[in-house]
Amino acid sequence: MMSIAMAAGPERVKLLLNRTELTCSLVPRRRSHLHILHLPPASLSCRMNTVKVAVVGAGVIGLSTAVCLAEALPYCSVNILAEKFSPDTTSDGAAGILMPKVFPDIPVERQRRWFKQTFDHLLSIVESPEAPEAGVYLSSGYHIFKEVPTDPNPYWTDFVFGFRTMTVHEMKRFPKHTFGQAFTTIKCECSRYLPWLEKRFRKAGGQIKCEKVTDLQQLISHYDVIVNCSGLGSHHLVGDEKVYPVRGQILKVHATWLKNFIRDGDGNTYIYPGIDHVTLGGTRQKDDWRLEVDKGDSKGIMERCSQLEPSLQKAQVLEEWVGLRPGRRNLRVEKEWLQAQDRQVLLVHNYGHGGCGISLSWGSALDTVGLVRKSLHEKPLRAKL
Image (cartoon, rainbow, N blue to C red; front, side, top):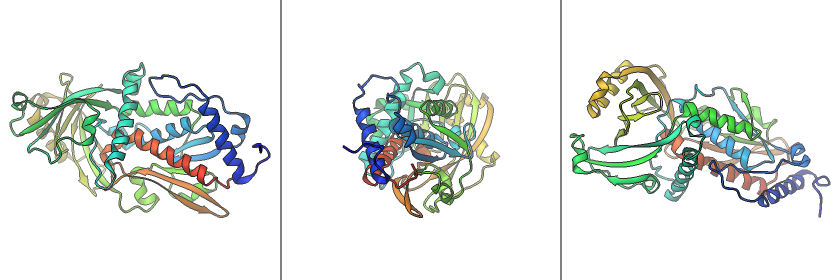
């Protein structure tokens, strides 16, 4: 059998991949609250023959993807490249409630898998001592509608806890609404979760670089694999005109007496109690690039939320915040190859989640890892190892 030291070029990479995965398959499975992949220390060959990976973006999608890559593929050296990190990402302002929309052209089974994997991952944190630091916890409340929705039982209702139709007595609280659902889901506060992910990424051997990437060509000569998690930045970075901004404005208020969330089915009005504040929203303004606070929007948010919860009229406003969601008809998780002189560089996309970034983050990250792994096996890189 040919040794890694004797092999060269594509065969060298292929032997390395096979040896690493064989080693991993022999490691006994361990129960772990956090589902951390336990791997033996990399051999000298692995350290000398790493596949260099660049993850562009440090929001919840970029960090989740980088962690999954670093933990699942020990033969990869993973670097995060981003201009902004927590607390300055769009993810930091997200309410973080796990309740995704349905993307029209993606098979529902794939969306179910993404949500289930994300829910299971975050639930494992909820059930661990890491929960307070990670900012992840269970949240119960009401999803109310002015009319009965076309699909009253979307796929994600199979995974949240205690999903049921609200009673007539419960609906009396909301006289302008005719139908409602009560359930318990997970809330993930990215102001805590992103730093926690970053620490986990560094523990897995990942490196972080503060660098604005304006052209993927600048990375081709330095990396073997590029993973694009740039969100709305993909509009310019890869020229994707299908991704567009969805402006979201929220209020953070002091209202410690509120314990249950309330969300209007139109998605424009919601009340999400959190650890340090209650998030009131919101706006969904398509193709609006404004990052300035709109006082008219703030007034409208407070008025609508106070109609659902009158006690909010006395709540102190702590902060007004604006962010731009990466809207897209369907989120993009797919691969392509970039030509770089005498070799090809793998490019995998993972962006366009809109307001579902946290809800689908871990599942789409695992799909991205699968694309990287499969591509490296099928087409070993002609890289300078």
